Image (cartoon, rainbow, N blue to C red):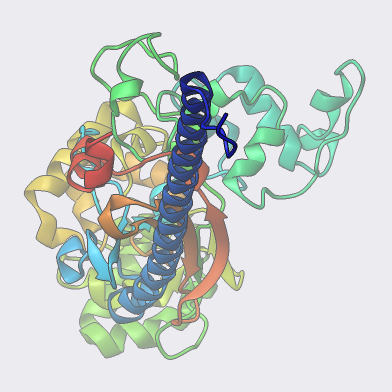
Length: 444
């Protein structure tokens, strides 16, 4: 009998082979798992870097907006779209655009790019009840609540509206600090505030035209129906000073207009100055626009005197609406213009863009009675602008959106409001989404 090590049986060798194979499978699975985990981590880091790039691009957009305003938005002027770039401005591998509005055209399927004039909207703090009542889809109850929210005593609406609630509440009794403060007002639902435009970009996006297939609920009529936020602001005021820093001349009373005679003589000569003063007479005037009509100024004369006069004694005049930039919906809310004249005004602006240096062109469409009613609410100057910056990182990743409102009353851009709108969702339309889509996403 031979002594020595025994060879393992075939069954034992098979068991070892199976164990080794299972170990190999486990190691391969662990390798694949950690590989996939690292890939996910790398992609997450890549997206994070893209988001940081988008944020930096948005910051660059804010600085660029300040530059544009310092160059083209001084002394109440509104920068024209042709004065600056507003779409796809590169910042490294990222880019930014200004989400704007074209108030002379109906909302389209793709955004309009540019800065937004805050004076083209109705000021929540100064608009009378009758003007608020004409806003689209607003309810009488919400108008009461808005007026009561800002009023300091019950004689003006005050807290009586809120005091009648169960349980009773108190109003703010002070001015609105932002338009989003409307969400605190009783009865201001998101449906009323946003309408179908839930991402607040002025564009009819696919999800805003599909009925109840996806949020928001809409009527799928192919038309965008914005909410109240589209038409209101709290940031519209203009300085009551002339180019040389002196206070503007108040033309409301004959006594105040006494200081106007030397200026008129300097600009137009003694004879013409006497004609203007005689035409205006001794009666009281409610607005600069009424003074323009009463004085029978010509189209060449009015721009020479427009920025020298005012109808207020305050350091600033709040809540005036720039008739050169306001939408048809906003124009329709102004007494003296109304729905019956708003569309004609928009059509005239389209046909005569060179006349929009002042509001003298209104005399071509409105009579003296209508201008007298509308005058206290009108201006042709703007000093507050919003830059709604939508930025995208490299390869179409890392979207962010930030809105900044600049004040130009001192001649230098000053930030008075900032808001992050990234959570509102994509704002640049379907075409921009497709062209910026990450190639890696197309493969998944």
